[in-house]
Image 1: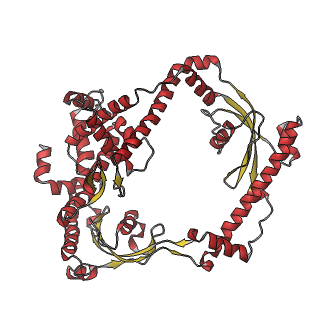
Image 2 (image 1 turned 135 degrees about the horizontal axis):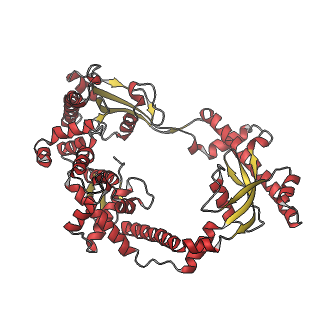
Image 3 (image 1 turned 30 degrees about the vertical axis):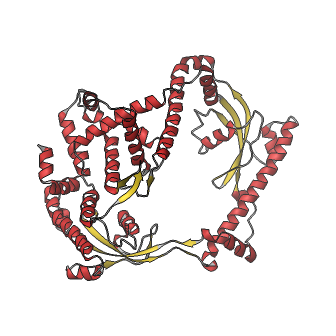
Length: 503
């Protein structure tokens, strides 16, 4: 019933559900605009075929639904390699292709059974609850312009991803000696001391000479750039003060004509194909054109909509070849059509403009160099004293420093009370007993780490945890193996994409 209703009245249902759920209409309008343009919106290719922005965006939206569904095997497979959000849809396409190639095809019964077990559809008694399913469809599926059948697609892909990973990682094994070595490395307790050094402890760094400033500026000129600035014209289709107080269906009814007008104006611009400029077209439609000053992407100020992050993002997504919005920008109470009026490209700062930054950079480098030299001087003296049989605390005191004893820790259990506990544990891992580390810069200074001794984990503790630990090590090793396989498969697919995440 709901699906048939969506098919016969899809446009208004999309707007209503979208506004109620506070979800952007960008995908609805993106699909509509691309059809009206009659041009390709291809954003990449894989396995020798093109991929459109609509297909890429649909997969992104499906993966958003996957997070809400809890289809963890699919999510781990698509995002397990730590790449940015744009890579997940590419991985999805690779997994889909490889599952088909290897004959991995979950049956309808498997999909139904797995779908009914998803946490999103379980009621208070732990059983499948149709009302939960219906609520999920209304809340997560329709607002994204998807259909309920795509839930089955996600469940199918989740099952396929699990089977594919099991097949790929079947050769991965962890021997008993390998597990024991890993356990000892992670659980052995380290007894250590540290010496902290701060930049403030050094004598004031001299001001750089004019020759130093000029040379640094010349050598590092690419670091001192004025960011690209943009100016946009725009028209706003917004609720008035009375309408802005509306809620529910009344608010939706007030927004519907605004959405129509915003789309219609963009379509007119497309039909004109540049024969009239943005302002003239807006004036002909009795629309008020607003214009921003030049602004940077990271420092948008000086105009009414500067506090709306998506406005800035939309402005910097425009190009000279496509200066008008592809789709209206939607906020809670308005729609915006944008036009790129001017681009001031990135240019190098002059020496005088860059001078404060140049001076600060030189002084920072001088401070860093002086601190490292001081630390090495202290380290050399302490190392000599240690070889002479003195304690680390006494050697540090003779060097004019105070040793700070760190509570015993392991890689699995660093001392969380210390702000740099992870760094200390990481440095200590590479030291032998009785060794002082090189200077480790960090924050407003840095530290030296001294390892007194390491204490092996208790045998009884290892025996109690070895089976669980071996399984965990095997799981981690399998993940690494799978990631490498996925990366290799992606390369073999000749995946080439150039698109911003639309999630």
